[in-house]
Image 1 (cartoon, rainbow, N blue to C red):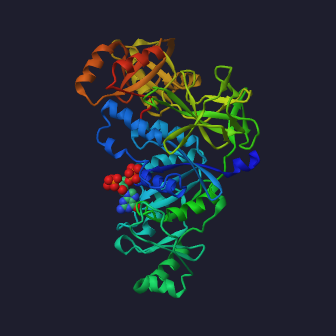
Image 2: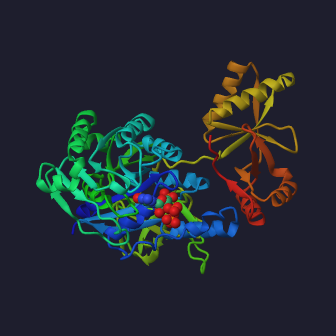
Image 3: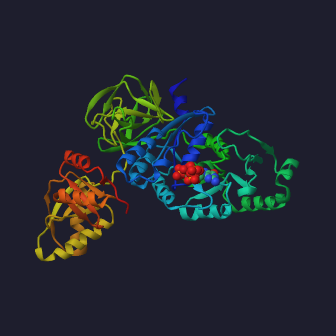
Length: 529
Ligand code: G4P
């Protein structure tokens, strides 16, 4: 089979949802449908760890578990589906954001009883940055959920995206009878108690049929009215609008009872985009790498330590963006300018790692990382370009800022604080001296700060170099351990513009040592605004 048609089969996506909406459950059912595993349930395991995430060991364990299931590949209806898991825990949101840069579309799972929740809104905003196409699944129809029409309105209003129902629920909770497909005029009949097996696909053709009338019984006339209302009041599905990230087709179902998932997946593999072309930067110019380009390229969106506790190894997750990987190939590690031969990349099949012989654009492969690979790194078949748009949140550049007129220190502090609230720069106040440190992601931001300080706060400020390599926001659930950490690391601690305690590391090694010495402390590279 040709490379082009292999690539065309790929559907690479992630699930976005608020915790408890049913992401894990639906993942199990998707895999079951892909018949990768016969009985759903083996993906799980996180529930035991949920309560104890503050403990370092179980945090590691939680990572391990979320990782064994972090990339899953399964065949479905002639397509090859790659599902990238995103950690549910908010501490890993940076990871989630980056994972979303590695997919071509997303599945949004909404708890029908709760509607659109916090984290879904945030993740949706991330998807919007790249106009990621999103399919919606309203879950838990076996419970008494909210009025489906109201839910669609909420999706449209709160998430700012048009919603097009593809099917419509027939009842809910104990009275749930299945879903009616508005486009195929087919009733899909619900059978309770089939959660762990693939239930028979019982269909009734035509809402006008006698079988449909028998199924809906007393509710038949009401349901006809409801469908008329829905058809009149909601958006019609528009594939172009979906692919442009402007409309979300919505399915109803119950993941726990394994119903409605198949109906969604059938359409998903048809509609969801095959690997998309991606933007790169080459010699400071932007250009596009077509997903169907024959030459290999990919970028690293995630690095995971200790995937295999026996080996304490680190795996770099690479999204293949063009061409194909074959075992033993030579690829260029663009950032360090070296060619490396990769013979032991792994793929992920429901938790089992396997040496991968071949992978094509759209697939995810794992590279063994011995410290030379960083998040965002590009690998190519010799070309010197770099994939862009992989978010980094901690500032990378630091300067001490000083006043030309010492009497204006109040204004300087206020100005810096307010500018940092806008998010493009950060200000840090070390605890051991009265310095003011500005952290930024790009050099230009330093100039903007000085300009705006003068313009908006009437202060003249100048920069001086400072020996800081990176910053991490620190947190700890154990007050005693935290006090100890604060005492030992006082020289490196600062308060940022938002009042959060921050660790300023002079070198990468220093940071690694601090993390190793204070395992109870979380060193965060991002902070929620
Ligand atoms: P998450 O990964 O998004 O956090 O959600 P998860 O799948 O773990 O589901 C959260 C809870 O919701 C689980 O219950 C799960 O069984 C339940 N659930 C998922 N889908 C459905 C559904 O369609 N209907 C109903 N009624 N419940 C659903 P739990 O009690 O928290 O966990 P467990 O003990 O059942 O594993």
